Length: 367
Image (cartoon, rainbow, N blue to C red; front, side):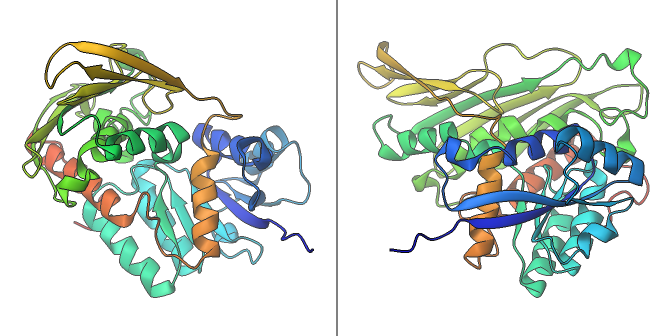
């Protein structure tokens, strides 16, 4: 009997920074080490702002694979006939034009979070991708990790009862007083600040626990937010936002900061019959604990901790999703579809509006 061969999915990489490095290292691991037998990833082209940095990236990250085409620009990658999909790891404010150019070239697109800097930009990308018949997804890698799938299953099973509250924080001390004002975390021209850089991670757990909850019927929450902005550049230094899901009578309290480390508490998903505790780092946890009450709203009667192990850092799971969706002719993922990115960007738009944080000049291409 003939054995079906795995799909060799060919990637073009845009930008050669830290996040692109992490993504590429993961996708080039042997997929069989994570139980994947239907997809193999291959990098066929790399584009950077200079040919030298693109070549250095290939030499260091991909062990000098001479079959990879190297471009000192992005257009060469977009138009390369040996590329199936483009991974975009450029700064936030470049996501929209980079993704649009890739889509227009007929390539599938995986664009780093936040996918754009406002909801209208992403809505425009969705329309463009549908027009060109290509797959488009925000790179919310946490949602595709096995632990997120398991937690989603535990919630849907129903034993924990109705959701009540989500607490989640992601903070990091970037030493903002001693880094250049042009650093991505401080520069408003790059969409700097805590919200757009760190905010997607607390939010993803609220989306999993509340927005995706069967009883919510995909209804959007109301938003209440506040910001503390740094006088250095005016980007948000500390941001807190509360989401209220009226269909569930449930809320999420989410926060992010760029001048203090995370509290160590991670994320807590609270239900009438128990809790799910997610340790740090909340973007890549390797375990979670389920606590069960002896009766609704009472003391913890028992708890169970589940651990996960896999090769790599967890970026390859989203790449597997892109390859399978493209193979199957899908234009969006059923796990992290366009609606969830539009939800996230709409929430961030409202948080910025309430916090008085406007990006400068014509940074927002569509408003």
